[in-house]
Image (cartoon, rainbow, N blue to C red; front, side, top):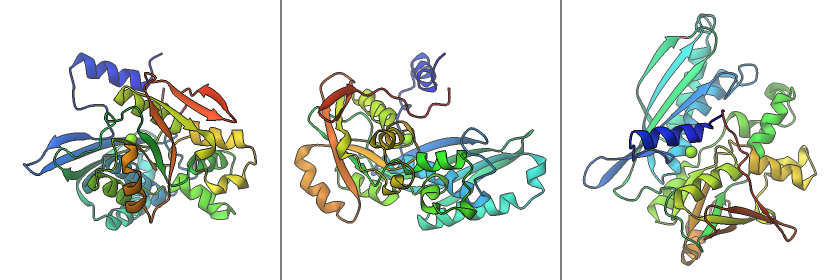
Length: 320
Ligand SMILES: [Mg+2]
């Protein structure tokens, strides 16, 4: 069976669509500015579960996932549209009111204006479509296609928390009663790297960038495919979320959360080694780590742990 990525690639080729395949589409706005725009579909029981995500968390996350894509272009988010399909039984509750509270709390933080949307009835599940558009200096959107052999690979923040949080929720842990609230929040209420994305974009710091939504193994492979390069990463350089210690002591298990679990919504970017000092200066108030480098090994991604080199398979999140 085709993966969703293969499906998108087929449509892209069949209809000669040149603007598809990055975190956002880049469209011309005027002589100084480009527009970036992204859409995300969140489906109940596929992307979230009603029994563990409160309406406020869901509102926050619906916007956060799209803000993360805008951040990955080095752009500033400005406008949003939000459409939602809900069952009649949910319509009768205060779900929507609370959902919008969560959405607007995050929108306010980054000055994002809601400019449209739609509400419709669904037979029995909730479906949310989130669109965010933003602006970037003309020609400066950071694409997936600019990496060159020899570039350094960086990630922001700490990784693995969101998928470990998901695992806990699947095992019955609930936020209200949990001793692991912060870990669960990595999954339930992710923070998009909106500020760091804009610093990277404005400073011309990166040759390519993507947000970590599917898991490091998959997202690094997407970036390598976009740039037609390979990569080598070092397991001991990966910044594990410290909270992973509370659920496992095993290095292999922690590595699995980072590589193959998704939704950390941190940024993965590559940069010319000459920019290293500038990156250290401009991102001095943020956590970021250099985890490896881009190679000329034709889209092959390798991971080095304990002096062993292995080919890294993409096993991150896939819908199909
Ligand atoms: Mg993305």
